Length: 588
Image 1 (cartoon, rainbow, N blue to C red):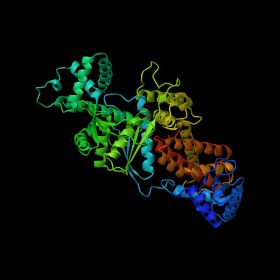
Image 2: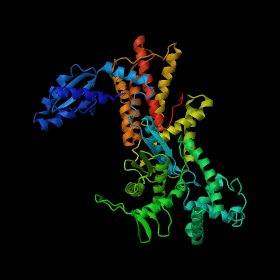
Image 3: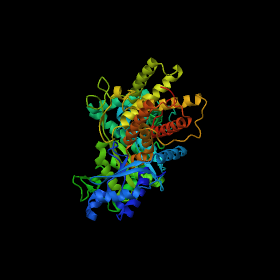
Image 4: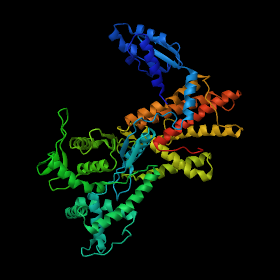
C-alpha cells in the first residue's frame, strides 16, 4: 500500500501545479503540532523566494485547489505560509480496512529486493555469552527481521571468533592438564576420540584461567602463541582439539542465542576465511595494491577528504601473521563467491569504527567487493549500570547472559504469581516472554549508537515506555476480542468505521502510520523508531479504551467498527514486536 504521506503529496503536487507553482514544493510531513493539524506542507515558504511572493499568498492559492480532495477533510493556509491538513475520516477508515486485508498490513515490498548479509553476534568460542554480547545480538536480529519484512533476502551470520589466540590458550592449558591425550602425541597416527575431553563447563573455566595465567607467565604465553600458530598451520592434533571446542561451544551458543529468540542462518567464523587469505594476499601484491611498511604488508586507504588520520589497512604483520583486517577482507571474498550480496551490514561496538573504515575502503579499492556493494557499519554504545559504568555483577564481574535472563525471568515469575492473573501451568512460559520483551525493548528503544543505562527495575515495569507495557496493551486487546467472540459474535468480515471521537481518530491515525515507520526504520537501520511508534500506538489505544465503552456500545454497527479497529491495532503491534524479536502471551 502507498503511504499516506505519498498519497497526500500527490494531492498537493496537483494543487501546486494548478496554482502555477512547481510540484517540488509539495512535500508533506507529519505535523509537529498535532494540536493544530495532522499533516502539514511548508512548500509555500520554500517557494516564496523563487516566485518573489509572500508565502501566505502561495499557500492560499494551493489550498483553494484542495477543496475536492477525497482524502483531505480540511486544508488551511496559516501565516506566514504553512498549509495545515486534516484527513478525511472515511479515507482513514478505508485505509485501515485495506491494511486489515493485507498480510503485511500495508508494508510496500521493495520493487528491487536485495541480498543482504547482516554480520552480528560476534561471540568467541570457548567463552560463555555475557552481557557484552547482548546489544549485537538484539539489534542485529531486529535489523535482519525488518529487512525481511521489506522483501529482501537477508542472511544472518554470527561470525564467530574461532581462530585466534584464545584457541592457543585453551590447547596449551589442556595439554598442561592432560598431557597424555593423543592430541599432544606427535607420533600418534590413529583416529582421535569422537568425544571431547572436556565439558562446556570445563571449557568455560579453562579459558579465563589460561588467559589470566598467560598475562603473568611469559613462557606460558609464548607456548600459547606457538599453539595458535601450529593450529592455524594445520597441526593434526590441535585441529582435532579445535573441532571439539567448536562442536561443544556452538551447541551451547545456539542454546543461549535461542533463549534470546535470535537465530543465525550461517555459523561461519574466522576459520572459514583462512583458505581465501593466501590467494587474496598474492593478488593484492601482484596488482600493486599492497606494499611493505616496516616489514608489515599494508594497503593505503587514506583519502584527500579525510579530516582525521586513517592508517593503512594492515594485511599481514611483520612476522607474516594475519589480523582482523585480513580475516574480515577474506570473509568478504568468501561472501562474494557464495552470496554476491548487494549489502553487508556489520554490528559491533562503535569503538571499532576505524577498523571498518579501513576494511571497507580496502575492499572497494582492491575490488574484493563490487563497487555497487553497500558496506555499512552500525556501531552501538555501551550497556551501563546505574553507576554509569559498563554493566557488572554485584561482585564486579562480567555477568553471563543466561544468568541475567534467568534473574529477570524469576522476577517476572514472582510478579505473575503474586497477581494471580495467569494460570499456574502458564506462569513459567509467560514470565519468560515478558522478561525477553523487557530486555529487548529496554535495549532497542535506545538509539543504537548511544550508551544507555540497563535499569532492570524500570525495564520490567508494566507502566511507562517498557516492553511489558507494550505486551500488556496487546493482551488487553486480545482479551476484548475474546470477550466479543464469547458474546456470540464473529471477528470475520468486520470493517473500521469513520471515527466518531477524537481519541478514536487519533488511534486510527497512529495505526495508519505503520508502513511509513517501518520503511524509515529499515532505511536508517533504526529499530528504536519502531519502539517509539508502538509506544505512541499503545498510548493512543489505551486513551481510546478508557474513553469509549467498546463492548458496552449499544449500536451494533458502531461496536463492529470498534472491534475492527482493535483488530488492525493488534495486528500492527504484533508485526512490530515480531520485528523487534519478541512475542506477546495470551494473558498477563
